[in-house]
Image (cartoon, rainbow, N blue to C red):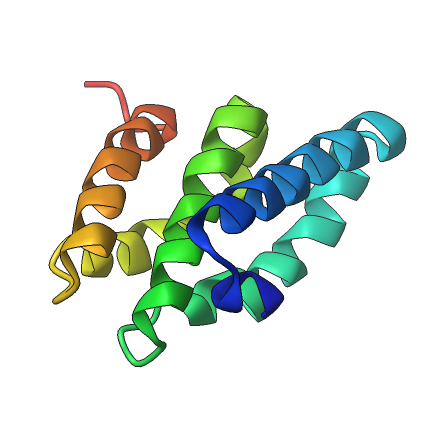
Length: 119
């Protein structure tokens, strides 16, 4: 993915652009079409970058992307959260301190969006 090789400031702009594009997709196509198109994209592009085998810059970019998507999409992101929770938890114990810090900061808003069973 192109985002991995960019400088931090450029990566932030690229991540924000993709998050805003997801918002535009949901507005233009409706919620169901949005889910249909975005879920394969997440599986193909975002989840593999959260793997521990990818370079630190890739992992950092992927965690940034998850954080931006959570911020931009809010509850619209709920259908994909199960795809992202386990890899994001793995990044919370990443050997790279920047990735670890980003993952920890991103995890709380992700968990807040999870539809948990009410007792």
